[in-house]
Structures are given as C-alpha cells and as structure tokens.
Length: 196
Image 1 (tube, rainbow, N blue to C red):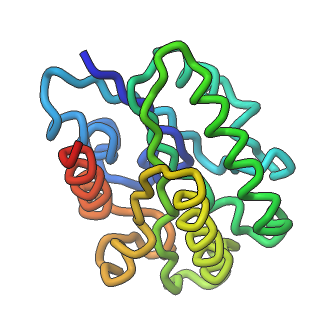
Image 2 (image 1 turned 45 degrees about the vertical axis):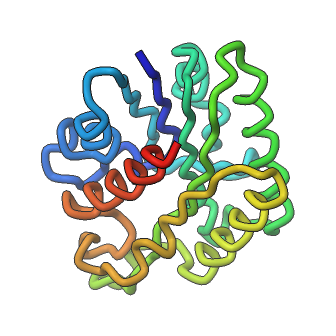
C-alpha cells in the first residue's frame, strides 16, 4: 500500500467544494490511483506555511498526523494564506521555512518522495473584500517555489500555471475551488505521479 500525505490549507481540505468528503482533491486523487494507494487529507483551513503567520500549519495536529502515517509520498500545497498582507513578510522567509518543512519530511523513516506544489491562481472576487489574499503575492510565492524546486531538485507541480486559464474552477471568492477545480488539481497530480 502506497501512502500519500496531502499537506495544505483549505484548498486541500476542500472548503466550499460540494460534497467535500468525496469531491475534495485528495479523495478524487485516491479514486484515480486505485486500491493500492491510500491518500490522506491533512489540509487545514486558513493555515500558513510561515511560522510567523496567524495560523501556522506547524502548530496544528494534522502536521504531526501527516508524518505519523509514514507516508511514501508527500504533496505540499501551502502559500495562499501566506499571501495575506498581515502574514507575508519576505519571499526569503517563506522559502527558508519551506526548506525546513521539506527537511522535516525528508528525515522520516519512510523516506517519502516530496512534491512541492505552487498555490493556485487567485481570481478577482465577485464578492468585494471577501478575500484578503493578494493575487500578486500568490504569484510571487509560486515563482519562488519553482526556483526552490530547481535548487533542491524536487518535482514542482505547478498548480498556479495549471489553473491560470480556468476561472470556472473557482467559487465566487476567486480563491477556493469548486468541484471542477478539485478535479483539475487531482488530475494534474495524477498525471505527475504517473510519470514515475
């Protein structure tokens, strides 16, 4: 059995996705991969990669649980909440903290294969002031993750680019995916995992 830990925020959890339990991206991915895989959803709404953010993923029990399953693969998709003005410090801080998280998972006995994921594109909201997430900061973070992936020689699944032309995959806040968006994320990951 191949165990996958999906580490992330509300986009991983499936917040606002219709019938979240079956339609969030980890559940769809598990269905696509089949019976030889177990995909764990460790997404937590509103959480940041940055330890200085208002809700660091590091402090949530799901961070600990994601390691306890002894994953064979870790998918990390954090950064959207880091792009809120009150959370974002510098790109250097973000990338340094990202390296720390990668190092944490790398030292696990299961020696998981780690995939870095850029946060999806943020679209203009139909709901004024609904989101404080900066589209520009999300794009800056995504570019930084691409560079860090090259530096560390890790695979980067570029959800930022893959969602850029798909506003129909998001709900009216421009941040969270709908069912179609969760399916898109799962499909992109499935194709990446199938390369190995």
